[in-house]
Length: 485
Image (cartoon, rainbow, N blue to C red; front, side, top):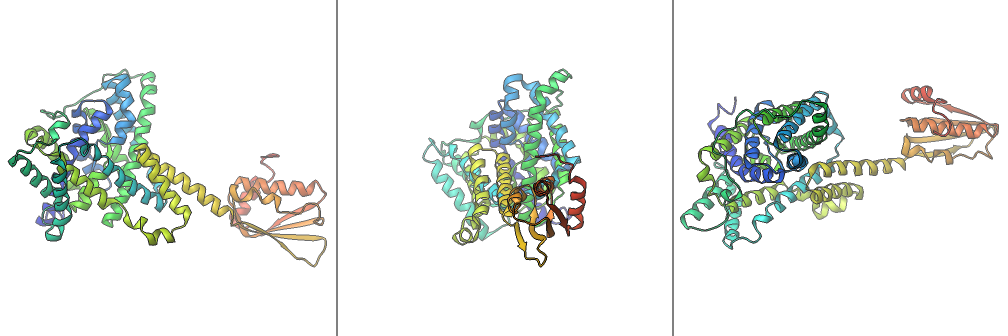
């Protein structure tokens, strides 16, 4: 509402929506080809996803549309079972996303470390850049000066004025130049045929049986998880860029409802688009749902009503925009000499693993999962070395006291059993846990094993000074875990 009352803000949102719509068209067509379906399915999906999420989503100014990750996941359905099953998969994936959103899957975002986010952003920038390379290889030489001119406009115009988004100016100038000078270069129209009609209601003609569910459910669940992960990661990135907070739970189920709507209008489904979102919030400085809504509306108006005009836009203009976005997205500070010198190797390993897997698989979800796993393993390894066992000197020769310090869990407590002198210790052994914490059953089992080993030699173990949480866990599980487990 505040944007509607401010002409300057409204102008920014409208122009941002127009720029995003222009950038969405060739990518939606390309993703349709990846999925093995008619380009109209990608374009219709981009329209319905953007318009729906503008009302349903929890992150203002974020763009959702047909994406490459979703196309890769569900492409086998179109190839092996046909269009009807393909659309049914999209709808079921939306249902899964609603369920996952309601049960609070968004809360898992708190377990994603910062270095995974940095790796995610850098991998995204690399993927955006490399995805433009096909448009720069084996093309007329005129493409290269056009791209250079576009980059000059994109990087230079903001220093002169920010009234009009630089990406829009670049697209208009390069399109005008190619038309007026009759320069023959690849255009948007070369990417695929644009639709001539509006999307209509589509009910997939599949049998509502358990067999159908078994066929499409694995693909639908994978699509739901990949879509949510990319959307939530993008939402967090936009939070950082705009210094605002988003509702991740609402975004989760909103993505699901948007995919259900998209499926019933014959679209291929989708999720948040990171590149287009960065165009919207970083290059065009949009901040509200208006830009998201208008991106979808403009896309439909452009491809249906002005398809002939859109078709003449040179791909060089959109390539320049995407290269600009990749440069702006990359976290250059993360690879500066100063940062690399200060950053622990384990943190760098997490970032590198995220980037390498993402770029190698072209799947941001795989990269993020790998980064989280690497971070967990390295953290566990680091914490495991913070546990120590110290023998305390006592006046009484009949008692030996050991002080155990640190956080005791499966990784740190497994070697605990080897830290005691079972043969030479006296008949009474005291284990002081006042400076330790028991976190899991593995630690309780280890303490049981220590007690058992001493008992086999006729010696008694007393465990003292557990904090409340540790005592509760120890009392509940001690002696109940079974020998050797």
